[in-house]
Length: 305
Image 1 (tube, rainbow, N blue to C red):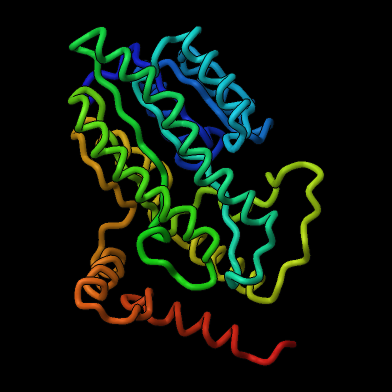
Image 2: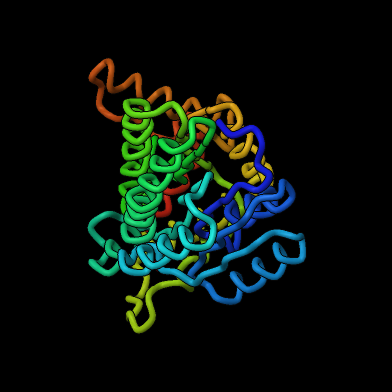
């Protein structure tokens, strides 16, 4: 666990908006060196200017986290500038929905590339640096936080491509926690699982790879996008509040970090786990909010206009 953040280094992907930007603001206020990573140049430039004005030492780089080559170049630059990072926030994410069989290969490559491979690259490149720093200094402490989603825990319908990526991040991060505990007590890990929080992810289509033709949205994708946009924009928990929880978890060495901790939110996880234990078929993943599933089902079964 990290108690004193002053002078420590944080690598933050998806730093131009949402949780990444809010964590950068907290890091700057606590005297951290900041490595800001984003694929959107205008958002990245604004974040860099804000954190520099706040007095932080900043390294800002436009990086596609799905690219092994770009992430390897970033890792080398981070080591050369700041040494091993103390906090790595593998947070960059994009979203796409619709019925599973309607997603294109391009959809799968894009979402898995950012949401899963971005985390993989962050772990494989920065954790060895952190372990080396820990071996060289018994007082050194580090932490890795990976952003998954409640979607990776409850598998809501019409979001299969996103669920798949986030479920993989859940498993990856739980394994990372156990693997780290095998070899060190100096580096912790956390799994961030947000519910519906306004972060800008519903507009992530703007960051699809350049030159890739975007296929027309299917009916299920149009419905899914509209329902998700409504749920996210009406969320009462802010990205700033979630970022505070991220930093609190680092200090407490807390693994599971949820944006929403109400019975309505966590009850969906409990019902899914209980179904597994009792070998029952999956039930409505919105069992604590049945009106959500009902609206989606009615919309998808209604005659096409």
